[in-house]
View (tube, rainbow, N blue to C red):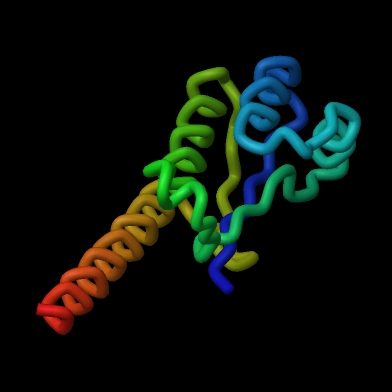
Length: 117
């Protein structure tokens, strides 16, 4: 499984961060987010292999939404620490990883299309 996790520093603008995080994942609770920030724990974890048929049919790409959420957190003034599979990473590494996954998905789709012709 490929997961990306985020930690936020305690001096993060809490109200703005909560709003952004809950917009991405409404199952997160306000108190849960606050507790995880205070404990320096992962505030959110996202499975990069996440797949939902309904989202696929609607054209929703959760990876893009996740990256957009990270951008919004940074713009709101939060200092975001990124972890890929539990190891510290930079935003550049996250972007490279997401780009690689997108390229692989496109290649697989092209291979499938060629095989069905």
